[in-house]
Length: 380
Ligand SMILES: NC(=O)c1ccc[n+]([C@@H]2O[C@H](COP(=O)([O-])OP(=O)(O)OC[C@H]3O[C@@H](n4cnc5c(N)ncnc54)[C@H](O)[C@@H]3O)[C@@H](O)[C@H]2O)c1
Image (cartoon, rainbow, N blue to C red; front, side, top):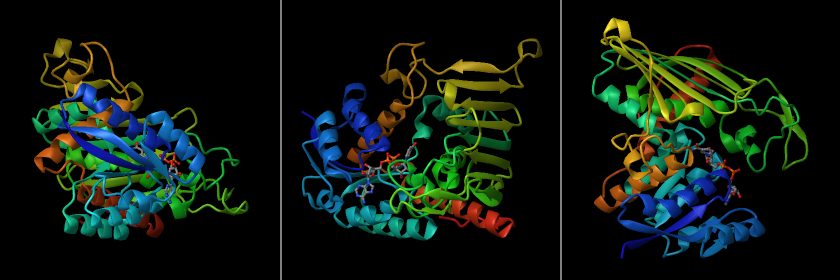
């Protein structure tokens, strides 16, 4: 019998579902040392929390997150609430000695993020921030190829995260899912919501970012606020583009917007090295494009590697070669890595401190756009 690990989930929305699904599946596909037990779910509306508990098999539900922290039987607190609530819950959970999984971005800003890191490190609790795209097998494979030196010296890193769901002026700010448009709840717009993913992946693959130069725009300046019922100014960045210099000397070029008509979640990156290049696209997430200049010229060209063979990252745990997996599996991989490391007392990347480094890049990007100048990135 595996040791039980009781999960207290805070937030039953989009991420609450992906994390719950991961806890349900992880033990079936990975040889993990713990059996996650869905102990308690918490969210703002009692009726919805109750229905969620019934649907996913949580033993109990509450509308007060403090009860999750106070529950002696909860081992892991999993934070899936809007960004402005992360810090308070994480700091309380750390003081209570709980292991913590927290959704991205870590916090509203670096100052708040630093307080979280201090609390977590002081308490010495296991911690992980859910930058799940690292655990798409093709993205993990890209990191392996870079670490093996196949690309040689890296010159360029470019990434985009494009959506189109806020073009209508009728989309409100505040409330379930649309809290993303309310700067008080989100901290920033596409920078913290979407570019944070690109920055996390980029620094994991290509090392720290040292300085940035950014521009942002808020295309729709006023929107109705769900909570007040009034039309209020919009404080988030609808679009953000930035250049950067990585510490290894390579140049970065990042863009995110929610105004790219036709794109729903087009996260792409391309990395150009001395010998080889890599490209990836979330809409075709099981493929990795690879070009190697060392190939014989008559067959040289971009290869589209179908990342499904059992010797590719995570894939040996799933079906047979040729059969794909998708978005939800990134959270299963994250849960598997977290549980294995937890049993060994080892950290799982990205930790709160690693996520703070991403937060500092976001801060520098927003400051650069505001002040119209290059900004150095603080080291975490
Ligand atoms: N890793 C990813 O790819 C990814 C994708 C989407 C969202 N996120 C992150 O996940 C977090 C949640 O986003 P979401 O899309 O699931 O949001 P959502 O709007 O779908 O759900 C938010 C949940 O938080 C609950 N909540 C809000 N305030 C609360 C409070 N004070 N106490 C208890 N519960 C509270 C709501 O009841 C709701 O259940 C955010 O930090 C977001 O940035 C990450």
